[in-house]
Length: 312
Image: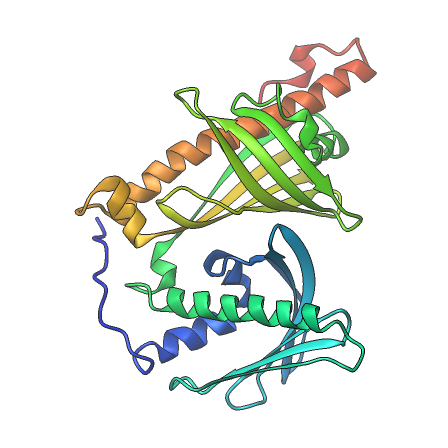
């Protein structure tokens, strides 16, 4: 069993290398920085790596472009919003000196530029805090997947996963869902879920529909045991069936683990608890998507029997 790491005294010098690693691992940022919902690599050269970041601020989402300019020493991070208009440039010499510069052409909304700088500062602060987690941030990350197979179509499965108004009544723990979706497939969601004891909990989240077979999401509030939860629903066509996968990655919170499970808690005990609780909801959602797609298939061809649909 892995005991919870102790928390050593941290200084700028002692956390320099972990900070450098977490700043370089852009795809991990949604786990360790609250405003970052999702990241996508766009391009890479010897000198510059370019990413798209979806950032949440006050329940609204904006897409920005991040450049990691590795040819500069130290590496520079350049955040661009509204095309090339607003730029927030960050450099850290890893010895405590931080330089953040925001520029915007004349006529640009200065409020938007200031807003971007605020969210960038929050991201960098939370990444630095995460880099100093006892044992390193990676020690607190846990990922699992659930997979269900269906004979329904990819389109019907994805319709259920995307159209949240279908979830109440279709998924046992979902009582109510309110959401808005923009033209880019970004959904701002408020879900009321039922606890095992019948209590209701309202959970805000952001979901991004990517193509016609994948939805990624991030709840904006999580239980005390966690710092963040990233979820993904994906659908894949195979020769004779379709698989529906729920993938979940959780960043555990050291203090929260001790609060929930006691001072002698282990990481394994925390992951077992997460797997049991979240896994049940994951499988309920996958089974509901399977049922929706297979009921749609039967409605198209009433002669189909459950035997022909199979039970796998």
